[in-house]
Length: 112
Image 1 (cartoon, one colour):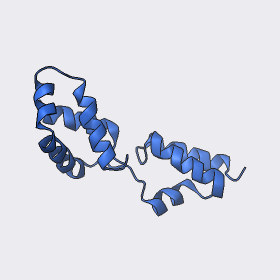
Image 2 (tube, rainbow, N blue to C red; image 1 turned 90 degrees about the horizontal axis):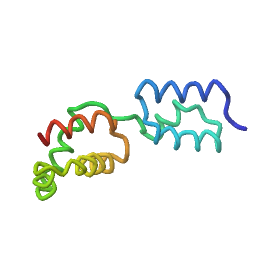
Image 3 (cartoon, rainbow, N blue to C red; image 1 turned 30 degrees about the vertical axis):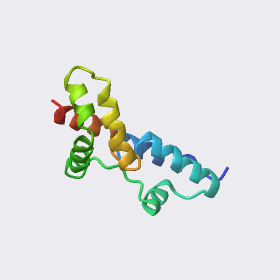
């Protein structure tokens, strides 16, 4: 085992604090197992910090909404399941780095 209990605690703290998502934490943990590298160092080296700033996320949402007018119309017609489609597209375009809770809230507000 190449990692310590202290490193696991640090990883959990990063998830709890919103620095990284649980999905990113899995990637970091896999690297920790292989290398024993400190989780903070892995996140910094690989640029894995979660994006929670609406100023960064909103332009991405606007672009995805603009590219999918049919789905916007379907959503506004009552197909609420399409919210997940838009959130998924934003997460995909950020490589999974966008904070899912923030994206969900911002997409819902934009599609009202």
